[in-house]
Length: 113
Image 1 (cartoon, helix red, strand yellow):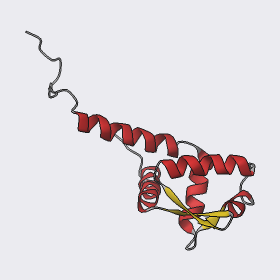
Image 2 (tube, one colour):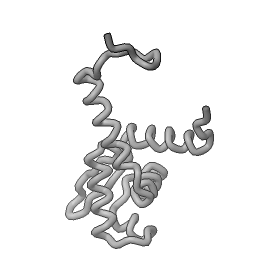
Image 3 (cartoon, one colour):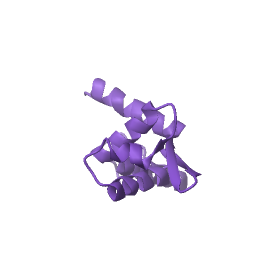
């Protein structure tokens, strides 16, 4: 008889649990870069969608790097892009705004035991 060393349920993760955790990991990877956080904050703070050129002027990285970070944020569902001619304009999704809010809350009130 296998007995657990602690009082934790001995049930395996369900496919739904695994899917949820994979999605959470994807969001965490997208948010773990300071440049991506800065980009997301700038986009979320602006009432109108922002073009890459607006972001590049305010960041210490090149335009291709900004575009790379925007792609990661877009794939994670944190920003959306809309085409206007040859330019793409970005705005934060509700998820992107909620993620920033949650992270800010954690920084202001650190997790303690």
